[in-house]
Length: 214
Image (cartoon, rainbow, N blue to C red; front, top):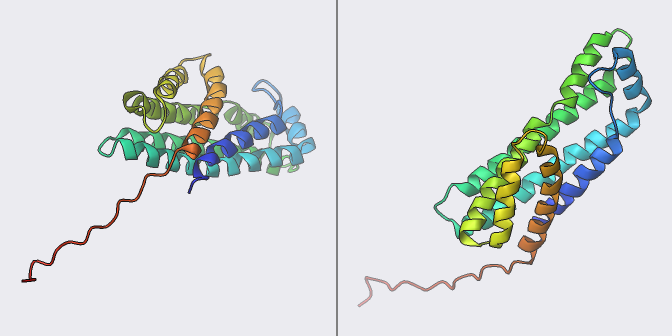
């Protein structure tokens, strides 16, 4: 599918909108009552945010599958395309777990029998649940970057080196957040470049001679 790579563009847009709609959530130092009131008063806003993040994971997996396909065409016997795809799976899992924790906070925000300590615990998990999706994107960019920097196919070598740099920065404390933001631009550029890439020509089938023929 020629439009398959553009699923990466859609994923980035959905993730950005999801975080924008979600806004500033309570911090880990807020009381259970403050957390309860926030998610009760902003239940619609948070539900939209978590749903967009959930759907973004679907598009991210489709993009990663397309990326793996194109990388494997140039590196048929390599393992880096599979590592890139595994990173996207890890990142999607992180997005979906974060969505599930937010849904739990929204769901119990009107349940008086749930103690404030439970809200504090779930909110602390939600605030620090960035490692899976940041690390997963880092693995995807690092693996795809190493492959592209070596072959220049299907992405230009400068995209490969950019992926390597961003992938490494994703695992450095205090820098990973900014690298994660820039990684969205990398995915968008990769989506466009892969969508514009000409399809590989199909080799004509050559009939084999019949050995039994005289």
